[in-house]
Image (cartoon, rainbow, N blue to C red; front, top):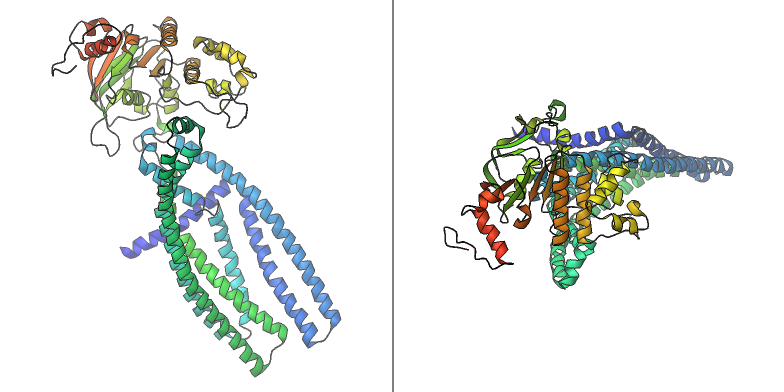
Length: 617
């Protein structure tokens, strides 16, 4: 079993190189050919000068011929110029070809990750997996594709070693054996160092991610107001320093191993050189040897030893990236195990007439969580309903919305639309019928128009619909006052003159984005938290005027005054849907909704809220 496991592990290591090869072949196979050509030129650049240098030395010191020496020198200069020129051109071409591969690879990876179930992306396990996968992509910081380049380098090294062995066999096979033995010792030491280095780097990956967060925290403008207004820069810096100190200990361990194994490698290399020189000197005295041949054999020994070290060391490096590739493979092929593949998904049912969304005994808990976020929820939402969802923080309101949007999938139960299980419906088709605005909405550093259309219509979106959405949220005057109007860039990431909207303006732009989508369901997850009551009231009136009976609106809100006109109110408590009805029916009884409503009203009016059954207020 152990041998089988080791065999699979080795195959997995080379599977990583094979994966990179396939990626390069898929996106730009010219890069593969360039790597192959470079190895051929590199071999020529090594051996041609060696042979010509031997001839130059023999012509000068043995034959005493200036003409032959000059002739071989001219050939040497020409060879160096030609091979050097070819290597320079090939390396430049390789860089361009590799960037093309990396461009498409990054796009592919981004698309894959954006399709991963949202709940998984929030976990620390996923983020740590990403950090380890990044180590494979960047070849431990050396850069994308370097692992493949090393694999091609191994091929070139094998050919070079054969040529070195042919040259050395002319004088003695014993010299090859001695060189191989001493090099093997050096390789073993290097292997131990590489193994320790990668082991530490894998352990270090999650700490690097945490340090990156502090870099973002201290440098990104979105945290700047909190840090400055609360005068907590010293506190943040001390936390940052603590994290960097943790990283520093990793680097100290790396340095310690590097010194230890580096000195051992130096000692073995020194012994190898002494043995080689002594052997060649003794042969020169015992049987005679031309000076050019002496230098050729000496260079061949050095080259053979370096080649053997590079060969075994290169294979060891690729093998030791096994752990990186395992993490990357899991990250790259990460998917929703229970999700229906897009090519097997069924179409969205026709909702142009009737539409009924139903939660059927739905429960959900987060990975590794002890308790359910929502438990055994049963409800129906009809087309044209104005639904408000209320409850205390942590009651399960946002989880309900995320399940409806299929950001999460139910742990138990199912959600249906017109009787069809939504988990069987194409995600892309399903998403077209929903528009949403979250409390933690995000605007992007693109143009104001792009932030509303999100690419719909490409370079020629429906400008009338864009203007209609801006009028709907009453921000047209502000947009018209900007120098570039709808072409104004949001934030200053890409434009130093970009527009940074206020909190209220940003929320209205996020709302305009949702209005722009011709969806059947509009979801508002507390999006008006930054709006003053008058603007919020006007916006709610707009929604009722334009959407009532036409579009289903689901509103999550803490401001119960704004939910009174909803025809359905869902009250959540402790992850359960405990009450439902309209305002009048819920307020007519001693319900949780009534107690919540009276508590809010008591802040503005002289109303004493009723006590609940436990006697609390």
